[in-house]
Length: 429
Image (cartoon, rainbow, N blue to C red; front, side, top):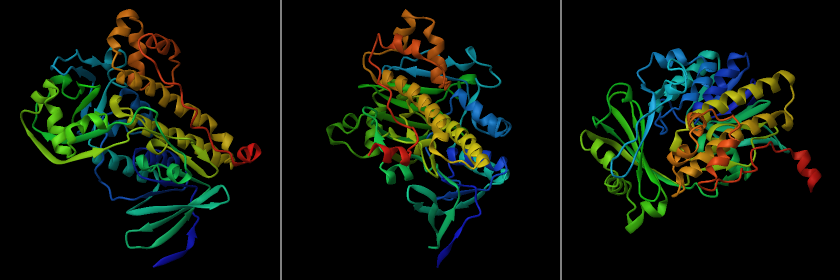
């Protein structure tokens, strides 16, 4: 059965019900707008990326979700630590040495199937209409302007939805950026990850139970170790593909098992308990969109940029961009003005956040770099490093970058993320 009519009863259409999409939907619906979320899968569904950093508190507070998280079973997280291949562990870096322990300094390790469902249900409670198991197939356009989308339901029904603005929150798939030819690889950050889950393995005690551990292996590779509730742990290894596939090893379990031997802390913590579920593999981690907006279309979350996850910035950038996008869209809806320049501030602010975290990620992967060396020479840099790692990403860190450049090169900022303006494009031809 095919629908020949377009449903136009919407102020905003959102592609994807993950954290960025659900956040934008909850905010816009809460402001009285008619919002439709189109989600390909049926929630709850599996997703990796379970760790939050302190400054997720801001968007979660705007969303009104802090009470729900505090009342949840999710593992509380107060710190992060780093371990060397020989098993030597740093002292935990406690967030409450810098921030308020009852607010910003206490965050969570989440099970994404449960957390994402919480967010999507929150959008429903705010008044958003959510359709699951419906896959967006194409953008509906009139010239350069996006008028809505065509989507197909699980039963094969083709549907068309229209709204003044469509938000692409499709995640790492980057629905619109790929189709518009906007997707750009990062010049350097293209790693491979292999991960799985353990139950009943070793974990720390007390306030350290929920800490994230970044465990180093040779060639600047690393493991994540993220304790979750129900005695589960998410654990994965990230490195260059040529390193992980050395010797012709390609099977994810074989790669994972071999790398466990490269860090004694990880080996010890996984020596008890049992591995559960499949082994996962993904490659080509980091990508960027050349633009954040074109007439009728706005990008948020991983659809705008997916950044190497070494510092657990993914959920922060998803939640933050979803809330920021809702602010920009709300103002456009009220003004009935969707001109590209209206979304410039959104693109600039989001890229500033990404570039600040991106610089730290580049430094981390440099074989000659150590945060300890910077802090030894410039003790006052410790607070700025903590702020950036914790997600306070719209600060001016120019002094910090100048100091870090004494120890390793940092990347130039990518000239990406501004709105695409067809009128300007035509004027340049």
